[in-house]
Length: 215
Image (cartoon, rainbow, N blue to C red; front, side):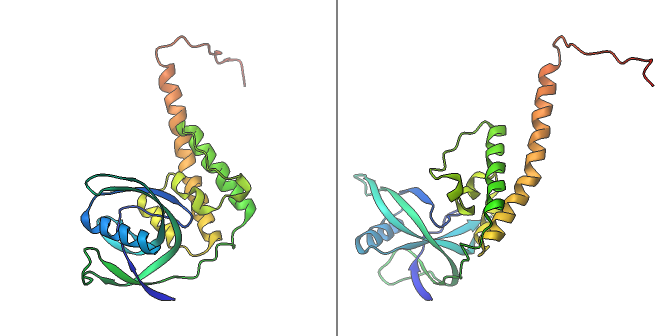
């Protein structure tokens, strides 16, 4: 399916199912949000990576206007719906301050994941958080978690989060995050050991002497 959507480019990656809070202050986006909220229409958040508008983004809906300010600014709550690919950007729209795009929606094999692999990913994310002393409540039971639920919490860079967005298969997304954790966790483990070693310096240490008679 191909259609036209208003767009709100941001230097973030939004995933389907993700709840995101936004403060709206620019006139063009205040107009966009007002119109989408009044007509119950979604809008697109294409990712901006390294100051460049990317082809992929996520269609989102306004679920709540949390607060309205006297100057017209808004605090809103949105929810990601599905991934889109930009075919053409429409920079100027008659009587509109914002831009739009012609997009299509790639088929997303969301049910193609592997539960055992996802459990390894979740374990790795929890281990990452333990090492970083971070507490995170996913608000879902572990057996319901999918790649989109944990991708923002796996220590990925913006570029890597965008690569995950471009993977249209749950198994591929799970494997991508697993490989990332497999790379980053040993590095953090080394940092933990280094930190403990630094703490020991200057302290009395109880060590067993090496026995020269040992062959």
